[in-house]
Image (cartoon, rainbow, N blue to C red; front, side, top):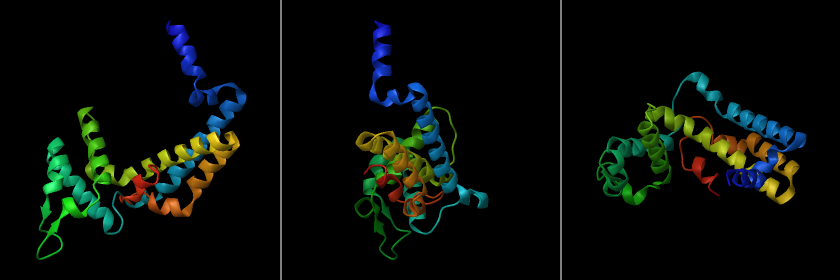
Length: 185
């Protein structure tokens, strides 16, 4: 029974790429494209771990609010009124913010801490956009491969990896909505 199951798994479409010399070359090229895309996006790391511009800091503040309250923070977020912004009346964050990015990052943070991996929230926020870019590159490859074959998939992944528009929104430290919006398209 297990032999039949293994045969079905390796005959599945995603794993067929690894069969034969052509599949190995394709997997090597895809890995190289992913590494290139990641290397380009983490170039700002040479100046240290930080967030760029204003919006990523607001997203980081929302992430910290959720993290500080544990799993309950996902519920408390919607009743949070932040008096330290939009002076003098404050801001009803639950009604004026998009919760997707801080929720996803907080979920990953809690999972990593549950597994015993201690990670700083700032480091998570800074590395999150390049990690999502890798996911986008893989999705571009899979879509291109499905529509036009292996060459189209590799070209799709390569063009997304070096696209300046995508790099700008998935650069190390750019913790804003676009970093999860693009892979979820």
